[in-house]
Image (tube, rainbow, N blue to C red; front, side, top):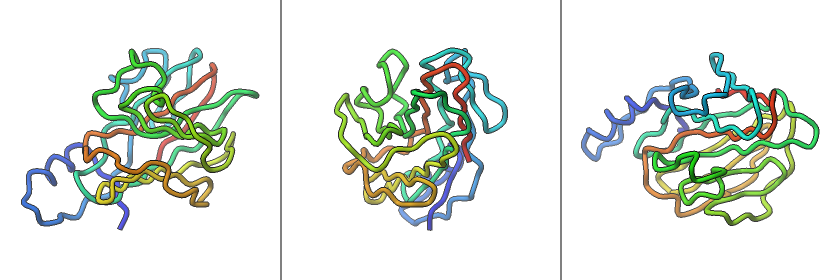
Length: 181
């Protein structure tokens, strides 16, 4: 079963024995404390007030299991792009774009994937009005993406066994807007 969980639920799950504890479904949210100051956050929506901004979701993965969240690309300027994926708590904006960091695993919606500065062709191009589903499988240590429900396959293997991963979106242009669910 695929689930979403809050950081609190993840801590409770980690504190239990090796028995698998069901993870409650919780709406993922943006983290205004960790996100760039010039990112406008309204409920589940985030918009860039200037270009090249990072918005972080709150940590929402347990130590085990398969977890999903969705990013809907609500507004994207012509020739713009956004990066969608996960970062560990070790990532900071000082590392540059999330996909250039060893702490980020990213899908660039132009059909590329990035980790630690290495990019490869992956999936298909996406744009405004598309919904990207991010699937974090901590049992098999993989990260996958889907576009509008179409599975794009496993993007990353050997994901570290971390429960401190959080959703992330990098917005290139002022006014670019995404919604998390």
